Image (cartoon, rainbow, N blue to C red):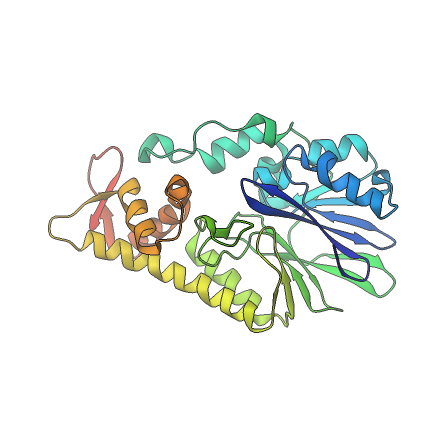
Length: 315
């Protein structure tokens, strides 16, 4: 659908959730995100053809962050549009370029010591390895047309190199998965999966950064379009969810003679939220590990000596 002049949202479904890519049709033709491996041929290229844009005319395809459903289509993009530059955030580059590195360093790093894992990587969705032609660190400007540009923002938390893009002419922000609310919704509205940020303080700083920008409309990777007070409420809900994690951990570890594993604390916070489907709870291990690291660094909790999987208790 056309969002405003020469800016389009491409929509498909992935695991029951909306999956959005964004296309900017200026003198430079820019695509934000490539979806899973099948998305370019199933959704992106057909949509461009409806606009009478040859996919080979793409100039730049940017992955907002390192996740299968945002990077898996990069190989297909490059095969069909070889002149297009592939780009991502500098801190995400190694994970975006190689699905196996993504799996080992982003999805499966808690298995050995903490006993939690997402299981096997879906090679069909992840696509083939594909090198990036360029990376962004934030602060760059993409000139789309005379008087029209995108400002590149570095907004980590969900991933180290997460990028967002700001169209100052329209006060529009394209934020990928940088803001999470209480979780990612299904296309039908109810929550599909938990929040999935990693570093708590960095995620909170990203929320504050978005609050400082004059944003009138917010476009994301999976959430509905938000305007005005909806944006404020979404950011506030995101911060409240962070606070809920801390309260649950301290309450659980504050019980007499209590120690808890990562899995037990994930279950406790999932029950407190009450809206995440049980088969998605494992994804909450990522923000939970971030909260435990922060509380441990602040001296409020400590690890139980020698416990495997690792367990924590109140300090």
